[in-house]
Image 1 (tube, helix red, strand yellow):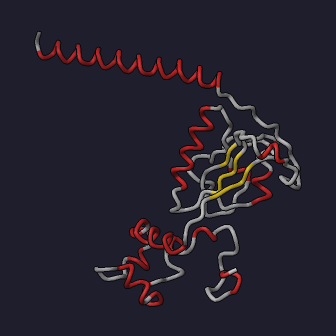
Image 2 (tube, one colour; image 1 turned 180 degrees about the vertical axis):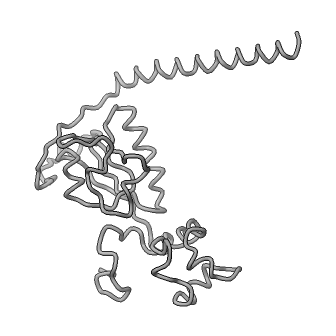
Image 3 (cartoon, rainbow, N blue to C red; image 1 turned 120 degrees about the vertical axis):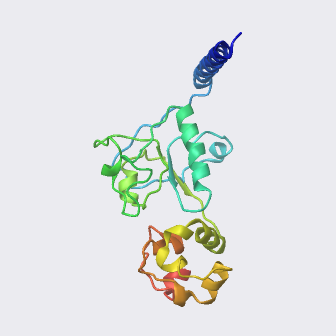
Length: 227
């Protein structure tokens, strides 16, 4: 058998293998969906208060999946890992995601409005919001059922700053590019006023991004920061 014939046989073999794997996945997925399906909550528009105080001890003892979720995705907190779990959970159970129109965030860092959701129409109801968003509670609540569960990830601000410093090194030119070679993090912490330009390009990446969504123009000494 010539080399050309061998290559053809190898391509046929791998092609058949891929077809078998895809077919097996489709079969098992449909079986999983049939046996592990969760029910969708009905949207309840114009609900003013989300009251979870009526739960009984019996309900607390029963574990049922939450399918209506608002994940406040924060920077450098392993939020992308959790978002991918939510995407897989939603795909498995055929849940409806509120996705941005053409971006991986909702026009961040501008404030969120429901018209930013892809193919949005008044009255449409979604199960999951999990992309980066500048949180705007009244707008988000109009997208989700009344029993939606809101959650986020918080990280120690010191660890968060160190992670942000290394991750965004190439994105904050008017601060990080000015620091001489060596232990740049230590140098910045020793002389923050010498290097940090709060009005520079992307300077906000070096602030506590977990605070974003609240008033983010406060002075460092403002008592509301510590509060």
